[in-house]
Length: 124
Image (cartoon, rainbow, N blue to C red; front, side):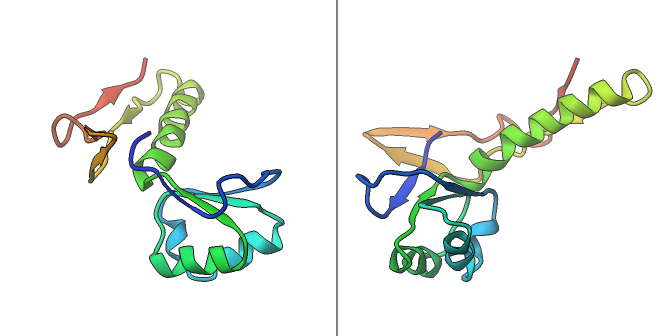
């Protein structure tokens, strides 16, 4: 994964993680939800700066790993599972959306964007 942002105590012992993938982290009340669930850290795909500040105030660390990186593996898994359910009755096509962002870090530039728009992968 590239484009990971972290807020909070990096030395903190973690025993419970709140998984809030995709765009769920734009909700301002998110840190309160995670606190009530007993989470030490939230893993989100996207997050507003205000939501990250609220999480830090609630003593909850945040790992923001990009919308694409947190949702795409589940979509691939779902497409593969759906294909086993429908067998030859229906063709299942996974269309990778790719990451909208170019990521810079450690002196390297990375991208998870699809090579061309509209590309697809047929699961077999």
